[in-house]
Image 1 (tube, rainbow, N blue to C red):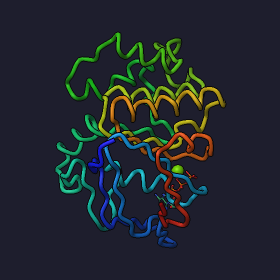
Image 2 (image 1 turned 60 degrees about the vertical axis):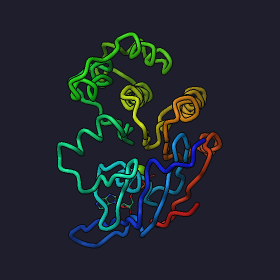
Image 3 (image 1 turned 135 degrees about the vertical axis):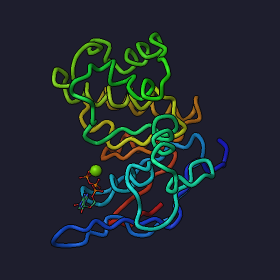
Length: 224
Ligand SMILES: Nc1ncnc2c1ncn2[C@@H]1O[C@H](COP(=O)(O)OP(=O)(O)OP(=O)(O)O)[C@@H](O)[C@H]1O
Ligand SMILES: [Mg+2]
């Protein structure tokens, strides 16, 4: 494994302001993720895992600090450039899947490729769906699929763009033990074979065992 930092966060923090209170969801922290490294993020519900993942993946902006992807700041990019980074470099698997209800599984998976004005390799997408056990969902809409099938579709969508970094928010949260293990093995393989940097939030201790590194987060404090 190379020791080059692909993704680096320097002194980032995030506070949510609601009408009632301010929630310091992420206390100041600095983190580095190297090429091909598989990191698991664990912590209790409400500890700040999704907040951290969203900030790392430029889904949300931190209150302070910098995020570098391959040495380039991604916080100061204009909207177009940021969208491009999100479509090409960072694959994001949302905790709530965020599939488009009016599109089939296949159409959801190829969406980022098409938005990037590229043509997908159909055989490759179908092979990916086969690997994830969702071939039978090819032409189904999200509301015709189980939670676990939707979750694997969301993962396929992130993998399909072959990003440098995959950020997955509890990608096995809705899967049975066997499927869970397969998905985590697939992520571990992606990190080793394709040198993709994987950051996975999980509640599953066994899933975390596949990771090279485990970060723990408690009340917004991140610890190695
Ligand atoms: N948009 C928001 N506005 C206000 N507070 C928020 C918002 N999003 C999250 N929070 C608060 O920030 C804290 C961290 O939330 P976060 O979603 O990061 O937790 P989590 O570790 O992902 O939890 P879970 O395991 O339940 O998904 C929580 O106290 C939550 O209530
Ligand atoms: Mg969460």
